[in-house]
Image (tube, rainbow, N blue to C red):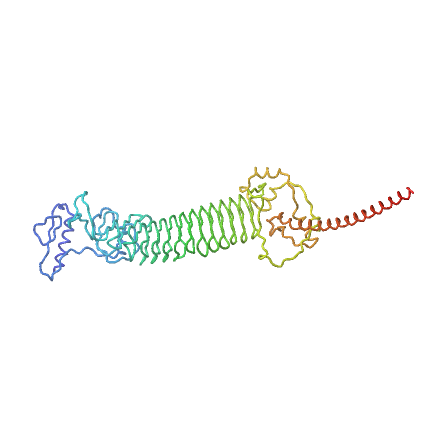
Length: 513
């Protein structure tokens, strides 16, 4: 019966509000209404419920009515009973069960905790009041995780939403600023994440700093990592530690104790201890590699070093220093602009434009310790080899070298090349030396034979000292033999001279008689 009475009263109110006498006030359970609608309690009996029940809708039902709501329905109130359906622009702030009011453009949740004046429990009424709130604080829709958190979500929430202090399990020790930052954190502590999706998958990782869009996004358990920049260390393994990455897209996919600094400075090594610094610098292979310079790169193994623009060090234990310098092999060193070395256990200083190498010493000492040598044989040829060599003079053709080796134009210094080509040089032709060694069956290590079509012949001129020494020794034996022969002949001549002198004296004696 009470429900029927209330129904008829509300129906009468609705009909009355559409008439030309809408200036009147309506009272329910009162004859003296104080407002447009004034509802008094019907009974003070404890068992009789009181209140006004607004329409209850699921979120999906509310979403389905999107088109029905416009600014003419500002102030409408509903109660949302669940969180079903896909959010729209008008319903994007419906993220919990409860009361919502329509503000003309979207549904706004009722505030749970009032803003009170600091030092009191009285609600603030002035713009100049210092205020506080004991509950979670949400601005424009999104619920915060705890009372320690603050979440701000605007119309473009999924792009530019900002979350401060967001973290699960240890909120007080983590700082998160940005949409989806530290979203899966459980027990991770003392993390700082700033930027969309930063440390998004982190669960137990601690003491990490991620600043930038998707910085350290896939880190789950790793500790003590620093990532600053767009997508920095985004695709790395989930439990790496002590890594530093600074610069857009910088980072390593595996290993610990790595450092990557520079835009697109990327490491794909399988282990740690690598350092790459420079835009586009790369490090591949295993561990303990160093690449410094724009587009500098190392690959192949470990302990490689590349320093300089577009410098490449491939192999293991190789070093390339200088713009466009390149090494390939084991324990290979190339130093200087455009220096290239593909011979393991060797050093190249400079490019073909270098005319001399100077040092403040009178000699270079090579290791030569009997304890370090085995299979020693006295079989070095002397004059048989040296006598077949063909010393010549010549001019360099550095354009031919660039064509054979595929040296890019930007790596060449044409003025220096022209100056180097004008110099008349003295030397040997490697192919002639090779023919001479084959002719006498001499395994000579002073010839470098190309390993591929882009490689060139070379000669180790210092190695010629050994067969030259042998030649001198051979010549010395001949000289000694000749000296002995001359000495014997001289003795014989002296004896004959003596005999002649005696004969002359006898003749003189005979003549005197």
